Amino acid sequence: MTDNALGAFLRARREAVTPAEVGLPEGSRRRTPGLRRSELAMLADISVEYLARLEQGRDRHPSPQVLGALCDALRMPLEERLHLRNLLKAEEGHFLCAVAPRPQREVRPTVRALLDRMEPTPAVVLNWLGEIAAYTVGYARLARPLGILDNETPSMPRYVLTDPRARTGFPDWERAADEQVETLRFGISKGDPETAELARELTITVGAPFTDRISAPARVARRSGTTTWVHPEAGELRLSYEVLELPEGDGQRMIVHLPADETTSTALDRLNGLRPGTLRAVGD
Image (tube, rainbow, N blue to C red):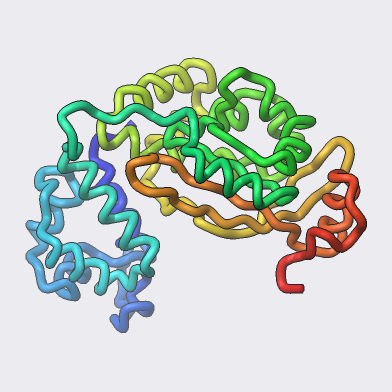
């Protein structure tokens, strides 16, 4: 796995942006469709040598001004800028307290109360290891038949990457696996020992499907979207989701699922023993 997440991300973004997207001519004899270092350096008003040092990990402490210029030059959206900032914080390698915080495996009472009020909406709270700390009954009805909640401390990375049922439950398994690895990447890059231990475990138990992903250039984890589940009782379900970050001290995030179409809305209502139309599809 890479120990140069910041540089790898910058290079991946440079290689993903075409000259046309930033107002430059395509030119000739171009080896890749992305930007050359010289082109990005010119757009960001920094030297080619300094950009090379950043990408190669020989300089891991760029100023906010340099990062801002690179973000502008690469036309990065807000979520990618926030991701880049997190990578920079990870490279700085420090916590606000003397002892590194431990992943929280329980939720605060107010978070539990919020989940209770969301019933029967499928919602789940995970810590930065991807362990499930709390969930609604609606989520349990969705996840338990797939085997997600089988273990005493359910772990989404372990389930998705190691349990054969995940490939049936998530038809787009490749995307699901990508997302689980991306959620672990930040903990690995900031030197969190428990995340590093989980990565070592998955390196052995999963092999290439994990190591290929964790060694690839970082990508921004999706914060919202639509995913497909195949439920043994309810059939195929299209679910829209939103990822909500809880306060930083919690080190947790909440994922809320909503039916993305009428068929899924009706199926979830039946699964929860409700009158059809209770959980309305997104956009209704």
